[in-house]
Amino acid sequence: HPYGLILSPNGDIAVTANSGTNPLSVTILKDIFSDNPEIRQIPPGARTDRGVLAGVYMGLAVASDNETLYIAGSQQNRVYIFNLNSGEKIGEIDCSFQNDNLDFTHGYIGDMVLSKDDIKLYALDQINFRIVVIDTKSQSIVDQIPTGRYPFGITFSPDEKELYVSNVGMYEYCLLYTS
Image (cartoon, rainbow, N blue to C red; front, side):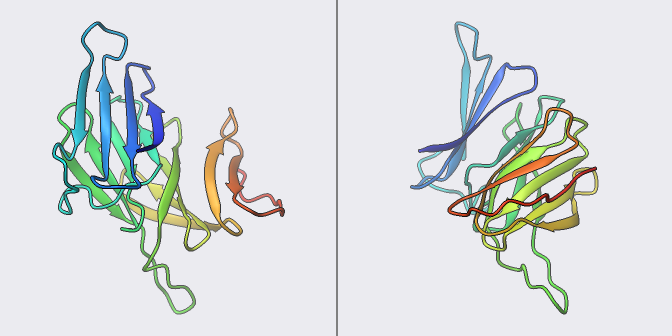
């Protein structure tokens, strides 16, 4: 049940986010244009591995090094980080946030987009109607931007000066972010 698909910046690796039924997983297809592509699934078995990849939805991003993979952790309110070469988990980012006025301790991370310089990852929290802005070096939240109801897809304009969010079942449009 692939819900998300991304190609690496070099175009040699395809990754699918497999959700909807167990096992929740990602499939990595390396050397996709060769006669013998390598195929790896994380987790490798027929069961979802709560210690490795407890949640997956559609959001995927591959850094320009063609080695670092970011995976939307859906109801876990996290972004998982994996090494594409080894398939090993190398980190995770908790997207929870709470203060006197806001409580985003429960969230659902869906679609994501990574800046071309690999510095910022923009992840949609579909429960809390926000963009979670993540600094990839510190692996921490640096900003949160409201999106309107039911954010579903996110992308940049080609020059990355504008960030676009599509909302499901909504007919209200507004400017969210410019740099």
